[in-house]
Length: 274
Image (cartoon, rainbow, N blue to C red; front, side, top):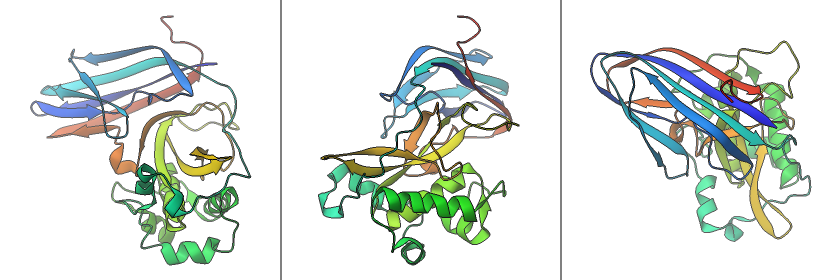
């Protein structure tokens, strides 16, 4: 199937302000970009680069005054739901590839060291592997209230205490519990359509979920989980992958630029100009 994805941001700067955008789909193997277009008003020349996690980032300079930044793309991907492998097993730490061990450590928003005792108390009796990750998702889905306001400084420990948060907070807490249990986990945000959801649909926005590294057969791989919806969904298109949200901000500005507005879209079908 094809999805039209994209977003538009409005900013007002008091001078020239360097900025970095991360809104283009990650160059993964599960989707293909049919076409994409960057636009800005006033016109701005941007430069794309790949960061440490292979995320696509675009740097530019916002001029003084108001600026509109727009990204629009058509992406082709499978209409299959997230893969499920109940027999996937947890690898012991000593058997993990060296580059994967990085995702067992605490990070700015995912305080697995602080919540280690909680994680083992809640999930220590569960079967290691897929069942343990699913138990983490089940607990968060049942015990953390969606929609509770959080801030850019809110950590997974804050969410556990408050008992609520937004989709990124659900992902952060799940990543935290998994890492505390010795399961490599990483944060993902991206586009997700309403295809698998029941109306009435909320206003379209970016969505956050997480991935864990488990072995299916002889090889380990990353598997998608979503503590917010807690079931396989159709149409996920990752944008940013990292330790937590600090690695994958949608927009980073280096100076006095005021955020004014944001619009996100992710719909079935090609873009209007195709």
